[in-house]
Image (cartoon, rainbow, N blue to C red):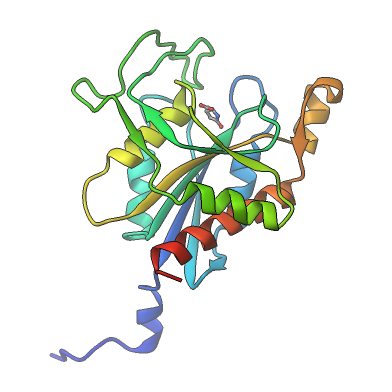
Length: 221
Ligand code: PCA
C-alpha cells in the first residue's frame, strides 16, 4: 500500500475554499438577489480560493442544518460569507452585530412565526462579525460601489444564520453577513417609485471585493 502524497489532480480537491450563501425568495418577493449572486459565484476562484455558492432555506427550523451541511461540503472554508436580501436598504450593508433574538412578523417559508424568542437558550447575547469591516467598505468605495457598516441584521432568519455562523467553535474562520438591497429587477416588480436598487453585477463585484479584502487582511497582505 502506498503512503506517498496524492497526485496533483486529487490535491486540487483540497484547494482552499470560501463559502458564500444566499437565501431563497421569501415574504412575497419574486426573487432574492442573494441567491442569484451565490449561484453565480459557485465555482469561481477569488484570491486563490475556490468559491462554493449555496442557497439556504428561509425556514427557522432547517436553516442551521442547511448552513452546517454547506460548510461541510466546502470542507473547512477559510471564510463563510452569508448574504441575504433587505429590501429597504439602499446599498451594500455589511453587518457588525448578530443578536440572540428571533422575533418576526413575516412568517418564514414554512409558516413559522416567532415573537420574542431566543436563537440559543443559553447563548451569548450577541456576536461581532469576524471581518475587517472598515477595510471592506474602503475597498468598495475605491471601486465606486456604495456600501456601509450596518449595526444590526434585524431579528429574522438572516440574523439567525449570522449568529450561528459566528457562534461556531473550531479552527479560526473568517465569517460575516452582508445584506443586499433589491436588484433592479426586484425594484421594478415591487414598484420602482419607492424601491432603491443596485445592479446584480455591482452586488456580485461587491461580494468579490469583500472576499479578496478579507482574505488579504487575514493573510497579512
Ligand atoms: N432576508 C431575510 C431572510 C432571508 C433574506 O434574504 C432577512 O433579512 O432576515
